[in-house]
Image 1: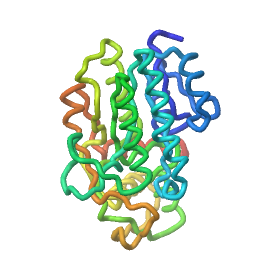
Image 2 (image 1 turned 45 degrees about the vertical axis):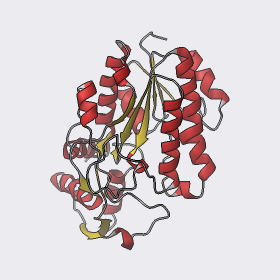
Image 3 (image 1 turned 90 degrees about the vertical axis):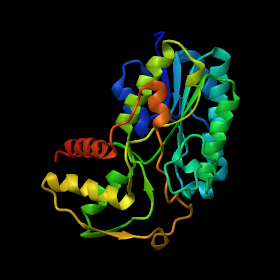
Length: 295
């Protein structure tokens, strides 16, 4: 492989796919060749790739399913990343590990910084936090990127769900009392590649640790739905009415943070990277969805 190879885990996931689309240096791996549920595959792929840098975009992301599938969540979100980080540490290879806003309970009422106390409310967030801790304890040259509300023109995400459901119903209800930062997978991929370029040109101690990396600005799930349908209307599509509801009116097995806006100042100060505004990211994603569907 090239001495600039970036090994990206996560298979056909939104972020992994966006990274592969954005750079010819990316070697994308996923199941069954690379599988956190099959630990022997991790070292084999790592040693075969001989990467200059690793991006771990693989995760168990079923927030509600994790409440009952606890062991699987921890294998994917803690144990696998710990093994990958140990390999990176031994080889002196930098690791960018992607984490989540769900490490916070959402009660702060103001944007979260990297210094704020963590307090996950469910198994998914707890397993991702355990993964962060394992990666940082490995001794690897590690960067943790917490992101939120990721969307892309492929895969399973809120934007695609809204557009699909909106075709079949003339009225929808969407939670309006949870606030966060929608993040385009393509924008996050660009940010990661910019960080990777800096890191591969020479590691500095200030690069290590936790950073927040999410779309600029914030909205609610209801506000995000309105944005999606605004873009659909601009394409001449008929759109449903979208009514706001409270979280209490839409019960789920796992509790979501009510306010998980991420303060991304440290990322900008350290790497000179700031993601575009969330609304611009949504517009690009919906445009790609419409283009793929021939709209």
